[in-house]
Length: 613
Image (cartoon, rainbow, N blue to C red; front, side):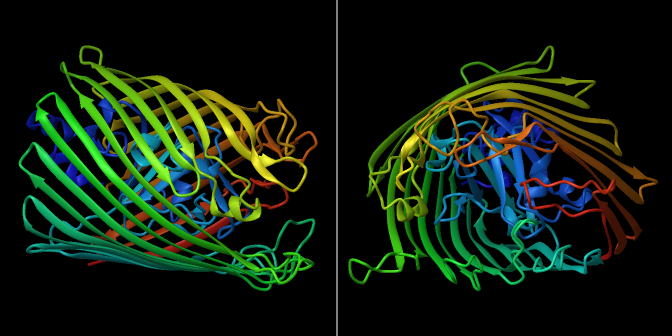
């Protein structure tokens, strides 16, 4: 996967000049395209946005993206899921510098412990992207790019404290020395939150180190580590006084980026990651202490060939091996000794080809296909067609796409479902949208309509069997506004309207026609940031969510309350080396829960000091 910085070098000289003011995105095509010409629905969050809003976790940054619903099971440290366009959390592929990091056991990614340390930008691509990224990209892709060191080495240290006995310390450093570049970020977070047995401790570190002997070659490696220890108080209706969950993760991913002139590029990633989970004690009165483990190895090769100025052929090879296991202490022993730790081994081999055509100025057309082979359930084919056209006279961009996606059964599905021949879940999705830039591009307004038809969804038939039973349909409208009327003032707003309906009666979780749980019909996000006297930055952000339902396990869903929260942040620069900052989360002290029975925190205030060297 090519980094955003490298992507700029791959486009034409004319595009490079435009790119000085227009960002380049990579995730929509796996090659660099200007954001205002992307053939896919893309949102971009950069490091400035994270800093101004004092966002500490990636999940909180994603709350401003249209089409995404972030659902946190209570307070910081608890399970945090992201639903893209109403599809399940395991239907979104999460990448870190091109490396898939979805949890190997569940298939979904838990955003609870993913901090913003050393993050340069986040790209969110909505719509099926399995042709480019394979499994789990059925609904879309969230790709996180680390910073890449440039210029003289610099370092930042910050410490803060506040409500609920909360303390956080972090360090960030990046730079370039001769042929070597580096970036590094680490943090420690401690809080007791508001309820007994709700404490959260998290240590995280991420680094990217590179060597560039020539302008055409960069050899680098990504390193990550995190250790979190969380108290699980359960719902307010059934509190647990003692129940802890520990998660430890680490990843190493060497990269090679080679550019042979302007017409041929190679990118190679090898990654290995490992995760262990321990729930001890597990006070549910039935299962007892449990543990889960998984390890994953991936190989990703990408070849970008430009035989003509109007044509780029992107091809690649992907290999993945996952070993996952989970405790099952409740396995019946009436037929003789049975293993209580059950494992699953999954191998995937894939190849893809995508053609990006620019036959006339400002027109981009993308067509591609992919073949995936799995050791357990055979072959999967996917395709994607997308296009965009920018009208210079009115500064308008039209874009549309149609694609298929898939999400294989997770190791947990197979372990608990006793592997009843489960097949991948599938989706046919399409969208069409427009983006309009006004007032010399100081204002950008976009709107996209989308539709998804899902089949083969995994569910339960009432006989303790996990089978391919489900079907669902999601559709809606995403709108986004970004405005910078003057240099120091920035407005951001987004709105999502979503219809998400179950269309099958075989899965007993919900009756046919029911709204999919925890998918709001309306979500609104607004924020404003202003720099006063070149010294004081103030930012206010608000989120409104309404029309949600909660799963009632076989019966009709029930409505759960709407909610609104407002956050305020401020930072004052004392001098070039020191600043003080503070923020108030949930300013209006709203009492709400994103998941029924798991209340969010009330009003909370934090303050700290930042030093730069």
